[in-house]
Length: 166
Image (cartoon, rainbow, N blue to C red; front, side, top):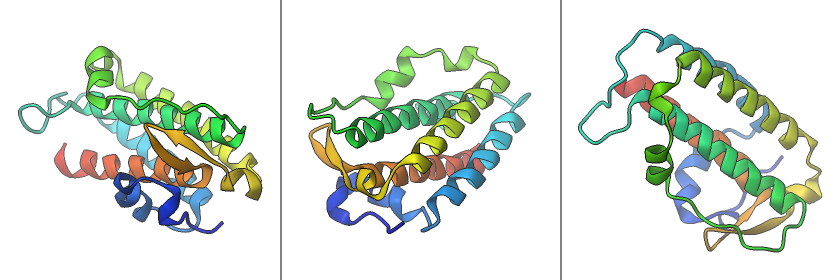
């Protein structure tokens, strides 16, 4: 699969897409296991932000899960030729209204694993034509292929934060 071109995604997604190698499905699979194990390794650690005003590790993981779910919905919608523009979302509002800190690490890890397995299967099912389709979300045009890379890159970005700052 060719990498998405810059016109296939909004500028804010560029850093995420740059984190993903060409072998997207293999990367998603490896990342799935790495992030699942990392989440489970936090069991027993303090659940505090690395600085005042920063999300806790559980909130960060919850954000990764929420964002992957939203990107996957956009990806599936555009692959199925959804004509309606999809809304944006406020990551901070989503985290603030969720109860991630009350959940167990095991629960968060299992949710991520189930979601990722489902999304990998969806991505693997797309034809070249479906990958080339696009739609509008948050007033920006995005292709199915770009969203698949954004899923992987967004998780990679936050995986690095979990490792380096928590």
